[in-house]
Image (cartoon, rainbow over all chains, first blue to last red; front, side):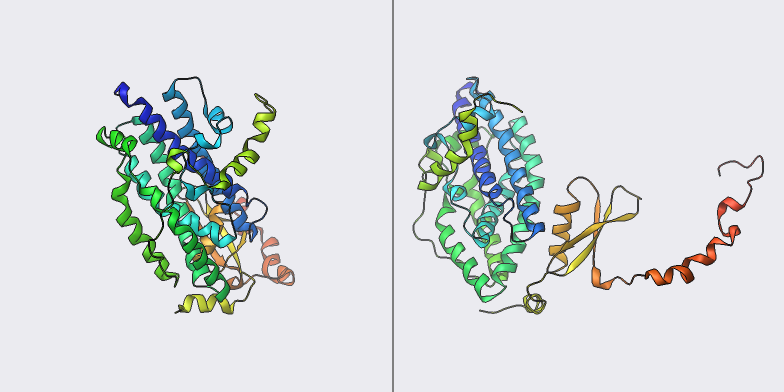
Length: 254
Length: 105
Protein backbone atom coordinates (compact mmCIF):
# COMPACT_ATOMS: atom_id res chain seq x y z
CA UNK A 1 0.00 0.00 0.00
CA UNK A 2 1.08 3.56 -0.77
CA UNK A 3 2.51 4.91 2.49
CA UNK A 4 0.85 8.32 1.99
CA UNK A 5 -2.57 6.63 2.25
CA UNK A 6 -1.93 5.41 5.80
CA UNK A 7 -3.65 8.33 7.65
CA UNK A 8 -6.69 8.14 5.37
CA UNK A 9 -6.98 4.38 5.87
CA UNK A 10 -6.80 4.76 9.67
CA UNK A 11 -9.54 7.38 9.49
CA UNK A 12 -11.71 5.17 7.27
CA UNK A 13 -11.29 2.18 9.61
CA UNK A 14 -12.18 4.29 12.64
CA UNK A 15 -15.31 5.61 10.95
CA UNK A 16 -16.66 2.21 10.05
CA UNK A 17 -15.36 0.47 13.17
CA UNK A 18 -16.95 3.13 15.38
CA UNK A 19 -20.28 2.83 13.52
CA UNK A 20 -20.40 -0.80 14.57
CA UNK A 21 -19.02 -0.37 18.08
CA UNK A 22 -21.56 2.32 18.97
CA UNK A 23 -24.47 0.56 17.25
CA UNK A 24 -23.50 -2.66 19.03
CA UNK A 25 -23.64 -0.91 22.39
CA UNK A 26 -27.06 0.60 21.66
CA UNK A 27 -28.37 -2.84 20.65
CA UNK A 28 -26.83 -4.45 23.73
CA UNK A 29 -28.87 -2.05 25.87
CA UNK A 30 -31.86 -4.20 24.92
CA UNK A 31 -30.36 -7.28 26.55
CA UNK A 32 -32.94 -8.49 29.06
CA UNK A 33 -35.45 -5.85 27.89
CA UNK A 34 -36.58 -7.23 24.50
CA UNK A 35 -40.33 -7.44 23.83
CA UNK A 36 -40.14 -11.26 23.73
CA UNK A 37 -37.50 -13.82 24.63
CA UNK A 38 -36.87 -14.64 20.96
CA UNK A 39 -36.42 -10.99 20.00
CA UNK A 40 -34.22 -10.33 23.01
CA UNK A 41 -31.89 -13.06 21.73
CA UNK A 42 -32.09 -11.74 18.16
CA UNK A 43 -31.05 -8.22 19.17
CA UNK A 44 -28.23 -9.58 21.32
CA UNK A 45 -27.05 -11.70 18.38
CA UNK A 46 -26.99 -8.69 16.08
CA UNK A 47 -25.18 -6.67 18.78
CA UNK A 48 -22.54 -9.40 18.99
CA UNK A 49 -22.15 -9.51 15.20
CA UNK A 50 -21.57 -5.78 14.79
CA UNK A 51 -19.34 -5.58 17.88
CA UNK A 52 -17.29 -8.41 16.40
CA UNK A 53 -16.99 -6.43 13.16
CA UNK A 54 -15.89 -3.37 15.18
CA UNK A 55 -13.28 -5.53 16.88
CA UNK A 56 -11.74 -6.53 13.53
CA UNK A 57 -11.90 -3.04 12.00
CA UNK A 58 -10.47 -1.27 15.06
CA UNK A 59 -7.71 -3.86 15.45
CA UNK A 60 -6.73 -3.20 11.84
CA UNK A 61 -6.96 0.56 12.46
CA UNK A 62 -4.57 0.22 15.40
CA UNK A 63 -2.07 -1.84 13.42
CA UNK A 64 -2.26 0.49 10.44
CA UNK A 65 -1.72 3.50 12.69
CA UNK A 66 1.39 1.85 14.17
CA UNK A 67 1.28 3.75 17.47
CA UNK A 68 0.81 0.68 19.64
CA UNK A 69 -2.94 1.08 20.16
CA UNK A 70 -5.01 -2.09 19.96
CA UNK A 71 -8.79 -2.33 19.55
CA UNK A 72 -9.38 -2.07 23.30
CA UNK A 73 -7.31 1.10 23.55
CA UNK A 74 -9.29 2.57 20.66
CA UNK A 75 -12.66 1.53 22.06
CA UNK A 76 -12.15 2.46 25.70
CA UNK A 77 -9.54 5.20 25.82
CA UNK A 78 -10.68 7.65 23.17
CA UNK A 79 -12.95 10.55 24.02
CA UNK A 80 -16.14 11.60 22.28
CA UNK A 81 -14.48 13.98 19.84
CA UNK A 82 -12.17 11.20 18.65
CA UNK A 83 -15.08 8.95 17.67
CA UNK A 84 -15.86 8.89 13.96
CA UNK A 85 -19.22 7.11 13.84
CA UNK A 86 -22.18 8.57 11.98
CA UNK A 87 -24.63 10.26 14.35
CA UNK A 88 -27.39 7.83 13.32
CA UNK A 89 -25.97 5.00 15.42
CA UNK A 90 -25.38 6.98 18.62
CA UNK A 91 -28.99 8.11 19.17
CA UNK A 92 -30.53 6.54 22.29
CA UNK A 93 -32.27 3.25 21.63
CA UNK A 94 -35.75 4.77 22.13
CA UNK A 95 -38.69 2.38 21.96
CA UNK A 96 -38.55 -0.92 20.09
CA UNK A 97 -39.91 0.73 16.93
CA UNK A 98 -37.15 3.34 16.98
CA UNK A 99 -34.45 0.69 17.42
CA UNK A 100 -35.90 -1.40 14.58
CA UNK A 101 -36.24 1.50 12.13
CA UNK A 102 -32.69 2.71 12.91
CA UNK A 103 -31.40 -0.84 12.42
CA UNK A 104 -33.27 -1.19 9.14
CA UNK A 105 -31.97 2.12 7.77
CA UNK A 106 -28.43 1.09 8.74
CA UNK A 107 -28.73 -2.50 7.46
CA UNK A 108 -30.11 -1.33 4.09
CA UNK A 109 -26.95 0.78 3.76
CA UNK A 110 -24.61 -1.81 5.27
CA UNK A 111 -25.43 -4.69 2.89
CA UNK A 112 -24.44 -2.87 -0.33
CA UNK A 113 -21.55 -1.13 1.47
CA UNK A 114 -20.04 -4.43 2.61
CA UNK A 115 -20.79 -6.06 -0.72
CA UNK A 116 -18.75 -3.36 -2.45
CA UNK A 117 -16.01 -3.39 0.21
CA UNK A 118 -15.37 -7.09 -0.53
CA UNK A 119 -13.73 -5.88 -3.71
CA UNK A 120 -11.23 -3.71 -1.81
CA UNK A 121 -7.63 -3.75 -2.98
CA UNK A 122 -6.70 -4.09 0.72
CA UNK A 123 -6.78 -7.83 1.20
CA UNK A 124 -7.46 -7.93 4.95
CA UNK A 125 -10.20 -5.30 4.68
CA UNK A 126 -11.83 -7.28 1.86
CA UNK A 127 -11.75 -10.37 4.08
CA UNK A 128 -13.41 -8.57 7.01
CA UNK A 129 -16.08 -7.26 4.61
CA UNK A 130 -16.78 -10.77 3.29
CA UNK A 131 -17.37 -12.09 6.81
CA UNK A 132 -19.51 -9.11 7.82
CA UNK A 133 -21.53 -9.20 4.59
CA UNK A 134 -23.03 -12.58 5.46
CA UNK A 135 -24.07 -11.28 8.87
CA UNK A 136 -25.47 -8.03 7.48
CA UNK A 137 -27.73 -9.85 5.02
CA UNK A 138 -29.39 -11.61 7.90
CA UNK A 139 -29.65 -8.38 9.90
CA UNK A 140 -31.45 -6.71 6.99
CA UNK A 141 -33.88 -9.59 6.59
CA UNK A 142 -34.68 -9.38 10.29
CA UNK A 143 -35.07 -5.60 10.55
CA UNK A 144 -37.00 -5.23 7.26
CA UNK A 145 -39.47 -7.89 8.33
CA UNK A 146 -39.99 -6.09 11.64
CA UNK A 147 -40.52 -2.71 9.95
CA UNK A 148 -43.33 -4.29 7.95
CA UNK A 149 -44.83 -6.00 11.00
CA UNK A 150 -44.78 -2.80 13.04
CA UNK A 151 -45.76 -0.38 10.28
CA UNK A 152 -48.55 -2.62 9.01
CA UNK A 153 -49.53 -3.70 12.51
CA UNK A 154 -51.78 -1.91 14.97
CA UNK A 155 -52.66 1.79 14.86
CA UNK A 156 -50.23 2.45 17.70
CA UNK A 157 -47.31 0.48 16.23
CA UNK A 158 -47.91 2.20 12.88
CA UNK A 159 -47.87 5.64 14.49
CA UNK A 160 -44.70 4.93 16.51
CA UNK A 161 -42.87 3.44 13.53
CA UNK A 162 -43.74 6.42 11.34
CA UNK A 163 -42.55 8.81 14.07
CA UNK A 164 -39.25 6.92 14.34
CA UNK A 165 -38.80 7.06 10.56
CA UNK A 166 -39.47 10.83 10.57
CA UNK A 167 -37.03 11.43 13.44
CA UNK A 168 -34.27 9.26 11.99
CA UNK A 169 -34.43 10.39 8.38
CA UNK A 170 -32.20 13.44 8.75
CA UNK A 171 -29.43 11.23 10.17
CA UNK A 172 -29.28 8.90 7.16
CA UNK A 173 -27.62 11.28 4.68
CA UNK A 174 -24.33 11.20 6.57
CA UNK A 175 -23.87 7.52 5.68
CA UNK A 176 -23.47 8.46 2.02
CA UNK A 177 -21.19 11.48 2.36
CA UNK A 178 -17.81 11.38 0.66
CA UNK A 179 -14.89 13.64 1.68
CA UNK A 180 -11.16 13.87 0.94
CA UNK A 181 -10.43 10.76 3.04
CA UNK A 182 -12.85 8.69 0.99
CA UNK A 183 -11.74 10.15 -2.32
CA UNK A 184 -8.10 9.19 -1.68
CA UNK A 185 -9.10 5.61 -0.83
CA UNK A 186 -11.62 5.34 -3.68
CA UNK A 187 -8.88 6.38 -6.12
CA UNK A 188 -6.62 3.65 -4.72
CA UNK A 189 -9.37 1.01 -5.01
CA UNK A 190 -9.40 0.48 -1.24
CA UNK A 191 -12.82 1.94 -0.42
CA UNK A 192 -16.09 1.94 -2.35
CA UNK A 193 -17.78 5.20 -3.30
CA UNK A 194 -20.65 5.28 -0.77
CA UNK A 195 -22.33 8.21 -2.51
CA UNK A 196 -22.99 5.90 -5.46
CA UNK A 197 -24.90 3.52 -3.16
CA UNK A 198 -27.50 6.12 -2.13
CA UNK A 199 -30.02 5.67 -5.01
CA UNK A 200 -30.22 1.88 -4.55
CA UNK A 201 -30.49 2.35 -0.78
CA UNK A 202 -33.34 4.77 -1.23
CA UNK A 203 -35.17 2.43 -3.61
CA UNK A 204 -34.82 -0.50 -1.21
CA UNK A 205 -35.96 1.57 1.77
CA UNK A 206 -38.92 2.93 -0.21
CA UNK A 207 -39.98 -0.60 -1.12
CA UNK A 208 -40.05 -1.80 2.51
CA UNK A 209 -41.64 1.46 3.70
CA UNK A 210 -44.44 0.93 1.18
CA UNK A 211 -45.00 -2.67 2.27
CA UNK A 212 -45.15 -1.35 5.84
CA UNK A 213 -47.87 1.16 4.80
CA UNK A 214 -45.57 3.96 6.03
CA UNK A 215 -44.68 7.23 4.32
CA UNK A 216 -41.17 8.11 3.23
CA UNK A 217 -40.19 11.42 4.90
CA UNK A 218 -39.15 14.39 2.78
CA UNK A 219 -35.52 15.52 2.73
CA UNK A 220 -35.11 18.51 5.01
CA UNK A 221 -32.32 19.27 7.45
CA UNK A 222 -29.35 16.94 7.15
CA UNK A 223 -27.48 16.08 10.36
CA UNK A 224 -23.75 15.73 9.77
CA UNK A 225 -20.47 15.95 11.63
CA UNK A 226 -20.00 12.47 13.11
CA UNK A 227 -17.25 11.62 10.64
CA UNK A 228 -15.31 14.67 11.90
CA UNK A 229 -15.91 13.96 15.59
CA UNK A 230 -18.90 16.25 16.04
CA UNK A 231 -21.64 14.36 17.82
CA UNK A 232 -25.07 14.72 19.39
CA UNK A 233 -25.27 15.20 23.16
CA UNK A 234 -26.02 11.48 23.51
CA UNK A 235 -22.67 9.94 22.57
CA UNK A 236 -20.69 11.28 25.55
CA UNK A 237 -23.17 9.82 28.02
CA UNK A 238 -23.12 6.47 26.25
CA UNK A 239 -19.32 6.39 26.18
CA UNK A 240 -19.14 7.21 29.91
CA UNK A 241 -21.12 4.06 30.61
CA UNK A 242 -19.31 1.96 28.00
CA UNK A 243 -15.82 3.01 29.09
CA UNK A 244 -16.02 3.35 32.87
CA UNK A 245 -14.99 -0.19 33.78
CA UNK A 246 -11.99 -0.23 31.44
CA UNK A 247 -10.89 3.20 32.66
CA UNK A 248 -11.40 2.43 36.35
CA UNK A 249 -9.41 -0.79 36.09
CA UNK A 250 -6.96 -0.32 33.20
CA UNK A 251 -5.41 -3.58 32.05
CA UNK A 252 -7.76 -5.68 34.16
CA UNK A 253 -8.53 -9.19 32.92
CA UNK A 254 -10.73 -12.07 34.02
CA UNK B 1 -53.68 3.93 5.60
CA UNK B 2 -54.11 0.63 3.79
CA UNK B 3 -53.48 -2.70 5.45
CA UNK B 4 -52.68 -6.06 3.95
CA UNK B 5 -54.53 -9.24 4.69
CA UNK B 6 -51.38 -10.63 6.31
CA UNK B 7 -51.50 -7.98 8.99
CA UNK B 8 -55.23 -8.51 9.48
CA UNK B 9 -54.48 -12.18 10.13
CA UNK B 10 -51.83 -11.21 12.62
CA UNK B 11 -54.22 -8.98 14.51
CA UNK B 12 -56.85 -11.71 14.64
CA UNK B 13 -54.34 -13.87 16.43
CA UNK B 14 -54.38 -11.34 19.25
CA UNK B 15 -51.52 -10.26 21.44
CA UNK B 16 -50.21 -13.79 22.02
CA UNK B 17 -47.82 -15.10 19.43
CA UNK B 18 -48.57 -18.70 18.39
CA UNK B 19 -46.09 -21.46 19.13
CA UNK B 20 -43.95 -23.14 16.45
CA UNK B 21 -41.85 -26.30 16.69
CA UNK B 22 -38.31 -26.05 15.36
CA UNK B 23 -36.38 -28.80 13.57
CA UNK B 24 -32.68 -28.43 12.80
CA UNK B 25 -30.64 -30.40 10.28
CA UNK B 26 -27.05 -30.52 11.44
CA UNK B 27 -25.44 -31.80 8.25
CA UNK B 28 -26.20 -32.93 4.70
CA UNK B 29 -28.14 -36.19 4.69
CA UNK B 30 -28.88 -36.09 8.42
CA UNK B 31 -32.51 -35.96 9.56
CA UNK B 32 -34.12 -32.74 10.79
CA UNK B 33 -34.26 -33.21 14.55
CA UNK B 34 -36.59 -31.49 16.96
CA UNK B 35 -34.69 -28.71 18.74
CA UNK B 36 -37.42 -26.89 20.68
CA UNK B 37 -40.04 -24.25 20.10
CA UNK B 38 -40.40 -20.49 19.54
CA UNK B 39 -43.22 -17.94 19.57
CA UNK B 40 -43.79 -15.99 16.34
CA UNK B 41 -46.55 -14.20 14.45
CA UNK B 42 -46.04 -15.84 11.06
CA UNK B 43 -43.85 -18.36 9.25
CA UNK B 44 -41.09 -15.93 8.20
CA UNK B 45 -40.95 -14.55 11.74
CA UNK B 46 -40.88 -18.10 13.11
CA UNK B 47 -37.99 -19.01 10.82
CA UNK B 48 -36.01 -15.96 11.95
CA UNK B 49 -36.68 -16.62 15.63
CA UNK B 50 -35.70 -20.26 15.16
CA UNK B 51 -32.48 -19.16 13.53
CA UNK B 52 -31.69 -16.86 16.45
CA UNK B 53 -32.59 -19.30 19.20
CA UNK B 54 -31.51 -22.67 17.73
CA UNK B 55 -29.60 -22.14 14.50
CA UNK B 56 -26.77 -19.84 15.45
CA UNK B 57 -24.37 -22.55 16.60
CA UNK B 58 -24.48 -24.65 13.48
CA UNK B 59 -26.94 -26.44 11.24
CA UNK B 60 -27.58 -26.21 7.53
CA UNK B 61 -31.38 -26.25 7.35
CA UNK B 62 -34.30 -25.27 9.57
CA UNK B 63 -37.95 -26.30 9.56
CA UNK B 64 -40.65 -24.56 11.54
CA UNK B 65 -44.07 -26.12 12.00
CA UNK B 66 -47.09 -24.59 13.78
CA UNK B 67 -47.42 -26.56 17.01
CA UNK B 68 -51.19 -26.58 16.53
CA UNK B 69 -50.69 -28.58 13.29
CA UNK B 70 -49.02 -31.48 15.06
CA UNK B 71 -51.18 -34.45 16.02
CA UNK B 72 -49.56 -36.38 18.83
CA UNK B 73 -50.29 -39.71 20.44
CA UNK B 74 -51.37 -39.62 24.08
CA UNK B 75 -50.03 -41.64 27.03
CA UNK B 76 -53.23 -43.77 26.79
CA UNK B 77 -52.25 -44.74 23.24
CA UNK B 78 -49.02 -46.24 24.52
CA UNK B 79 -50.37 -49.76 25.11
CA UNK B 80 -52.28 -50.31 21.86
CA UNK B 81 -49.69 -48.44 19.78
CA UNK B 82 -46.46 -49.91 21.02
CA UNK B 83 -46.98 -53.03 23.12
CA UNK B 84 -47.68 -55.51 20.29
CA UNK B 85 -44.16 -55.02 19.02
CA UNK B 86 -42.55 -56.08 22.26
CA UNK B 87 -43.86 -59.68 22.36
CA UNK B 88 -42.99 -60.35 18.74
CA UNK B 89 -39.23 -60.54 18.83
CA UNK B 90 -39.01 -61.46 15.14
CA UNK B 91 -39.94 -57.83 14.38
CA UNK B 92 -36.54 -56.75 15.63
CA UNK B 93 -33.50 -57.27 13.45
CA UNK B 94 -31.60 -58.70 16.42
CA UNK B 95 -33.89 -61.78 16.23
CA UNK B 96 -32.13 -63.00 13.13
CA UNK B 97 -28.73 -64.59 13.24
CA UNK B 98 -26.39 -63.44 10.54
CA UNK B 99 -24.92 -66.46 8.72
CA UNK B 100 -21.18 -66.87 8.82
CA UNK B 101 -19.47 -65.38 5.83
CA UNK B 102 -21.98 -62.60 5.20
CA UNK B 103 -20.17 -59.33 4.82
CA UNK B 104 -21.28 -55.72 4.87
CA UNK B 105 -24.02 -56.10 7.51
